[in-house]
Every structure is written in C-alpha cells, then in structure tokens.
Length: 575
Image (cartoon, rainbow, N blue to C red; front, top):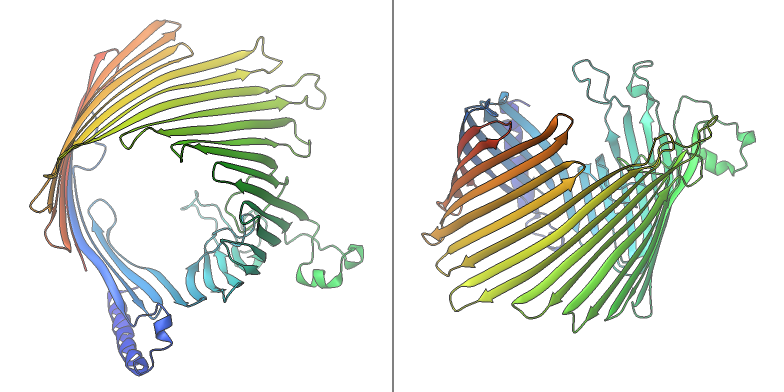
C-alpha cells in the first residue's frame, strides 16, 4: 500500500469516527457495557546504531548498522490496525507494511472478532490454528455458543525461488461449540469442526500432494463431586478424514449409515475414521492430592485443525502430592507411562517411563531447601522382519537427574543478602541390544554440577552480585571440566532514572579425549565483560547504551584465539 493511499485512508477513517461518535453521544447505555471506544491510538518511533569489531576471527556481523523504525496502531469501535515503517542498512532498505487488520469487540457476554482469529474447540480438533475470517462467542448465563469460520491456509504454488516452502492447497475451515456450564466448574460441551482443501486453488498436475477433507465431533465434560473434592473430566474426538478428494466416492448402496449423514459428509475410498481422547480424575484434600489421567490417540488419527499431532500412542498419568506442617513441607510427583504400536502392526514398539519428583522445605522465612529427582526410562523392542529370524534395532536408555538447592535470605536494617547453593548429578546410559551386534554396545555419561551465588542489595539503589559454577563430565573416553566465575553490579541514580550495570566473567574449560592416535588435551579460557547504561529522559523517551567484549585464549591444544568488541545505542519515544 502506497504512502498517499495509507494517509488518505486514515484521514477518511478519522472523519467517519467523528461523525459516528457525535451521533452516538446522546445514548450511552449500550456503549457503557462494551469495550468500544471511538478512537484510541499509540505507537513509537526510534533509531539504533551498532558497531562491531573482531580480531583473530572473521566478523560475525556487519561492522556498523543503522536502523530507524516507526509504528502506529489504532483502534476504532473494535477495528484494530497499524502501520510499521522500517529502514535498515543491513536489510532491504525502506519497507512499509500495513501488517495487521482485525476487528474485536466485547459486550457483556458477547464477543465478536474478525480478521486473523483463533480459538480452541478441543484438544484434538481445532486447537488454536489461525483462521482468517470471523469468530463469535456468546456466553449468556450458563450457556455457551461459539462459531468460527474462514480460510485456514492459503494456496502455495511450487516455485524454484521458494523451494523450501511446502506447496499446499487453499483450505477453508469452520467450527462450532455449544454447551451448558462454566469452564471453571461443571460443564458439558459438544463441538464440531470441518475443513476442506479447495481443489480449484491449484491447477491439475502442479504438485504431488492430494486435497484433503476432515470432519470431527467432540463431546467433553467436567463434573465435581463431594463439594469439589473429586473432579472428573473427559473428551473424545471422532475424526473422519479423507486423504484424497480426487479418489472415488463410496456408493450409497454400500454404506450402512443413515442418508442424512452422507448428505453432510460423503465418504471416499480414501476416507478413514479414527478417534483420540483423554480422561482425568483429580482428588484433592488439605493434606493430599492425587491425579489420574489416561490419553489414547489411535494410529492414523489426523486432524486438520492442528499443526502437528503424534498418533499411535497412549499415556497413563499419576500425580500424587502431599503437604505437611502447614505447607512447610511439600512433596509432589508426576509419573507418566507411555507406549506406541497400539495395534501391534509395526516392527518396533517404544515404551517410556517418566518420573519427575520435587520437594520443598521451608524452615523459616530466611532458610529453605528444595530438591528434585527426574527419571527417564526409554525402551525400544524390535520384532524380526519377514524372512528374518532375529530382530535388529533394540535400544534402551536410562537417565537420572538429581538436584539439591538450599537458599538463604538474610534481611538487615539496610541491606538484604541472598545466598543460593545448588549441586546436582546427571547420568545417561544408552544400550544397543541388536542381535546382529557382536556384543551389546553401551554408552554412559555422568556429570556433576555445582553453583553458588551471592547478592546484596543496599537501600541507595546499589546491588552487588557474584556467582561461581563448576561442571565435570565423563562420557565414553572423554572428560570435560568447566569452571567459571561472574561478578556484577548495578546502581540506580538521579531518582532511579539512570541505571548503570557492569558484568565481568571468567571461564576455564578443559577437554580430554581418547583417540586412536593417543590422548588429546584442549584447555581454553575466556574473559567477558559488559557495560550498560539506561536513561529515562521522560515518561515517553528512553535511550540505552551497551558495550560488550569477549576474549578467547588457548592454553593447550588446538583452538582459535580471538577478541570481539561490540557496542550499540538505541533511542525510543512512545506516544
């Protein structure tokens, strides 16, 4: 859109707003119940400068970049739009985008949107996929009604200039939900979703993909029992999916279903029916909680209302939690048991177990202790292929992660001290059990990590912080040792309008590897520093100056020695 046309359109819109607002000024009873305003605008303008220099390596970014920007957003009686202007010496020069146009209005229990809209009808049908069209939601009292429709995907034609873009048909989607109850309490909802590729949006033979069609139906409910102590909820989506609209339709005489159904969705030879669903029960008391859940997604389940979904899997979830001593001691865990190959038609079956447990002890307002343990078990079992007597490809993985962290907060008359210490152990073991292997191959990786941090805050706006960390890892003939320390400070002055920050860091890294030619050793050290100044000129004007440097040195072995220096300045005014 050209600049002259944009300015003319904005002027015309402002004139219409003034006329409408004066005509409606006499009656405010309706407008008081909405979020509509005659006109509201905002935006910002600014510029930034950055410089970069490197010694010892090639430049990772341009030596100098200038960028200016301006954006303007407005809302008028629910109509929202904006204008972005950008100029950069590192990009494509001047760009102007009328990049958004939408309509959004709320009145009591009614919501109306137009433009790029999205909603969630269920977990497995339409789940936040963007649609360019319209959306209406009405929730009077305990009733709910939702409807959405529009273009969910535009046509993308094959192009040598855009070979990385996957071609696709234009797709249109429509959905609706109705029910009774509140989302935070008991409810029953019934939703449906329909999507179809527009076969005429691409010429015949332009691409190999097939036009698709999808219809789904989802009932979902939630009910609370025993004064909310027990809550039950579930949803199941039945999906009718056609892989190729160019395939032959099934004759009505061969269908043992009512005729009114085929009038809505007539199946093809490539049509399949599948389902996905979940159920959950939560039991809650003052001292103990228990959650039980189950999810199953059938093999071949596909929904055009979701970007990606992994089918052929089921999961069992167990979530216990206990609390003691008026919540000073809390322990909780999440256990997940999963597997795939639900119909037993594949040569490999993967099963996994995940346990994530944590605890927190509050000894006093100043001393606390927290910890966590995570366990991951992954196992792949293989069946012999046709014509073979032995299976190939078995694998198992076991991972442990243990972390302990005490925290101390010491509050004085004028200062506050924060001390945090953490230590952890991480291990991962991988075994390959294929029968064609001369012997079972295994890989073990073990790591120990530790960190300590200290920060002190003064009432004059001065903060000092420091931290140190250490890591050692031993895995399959190689070992890594890493240690680092960081020191920083920040100071706010001039009524906290100016904030100065300084960070300095030092890191040492040692890597030893066993190779056929012998053992190799690499030792590196790195220094880093940063300085930042942020100043608020007024409530609407701010600028920021940043300087950063990094120096890498090789003590033993191979590596690159280099120094980097970069700086930037940014100014912005909002209105």
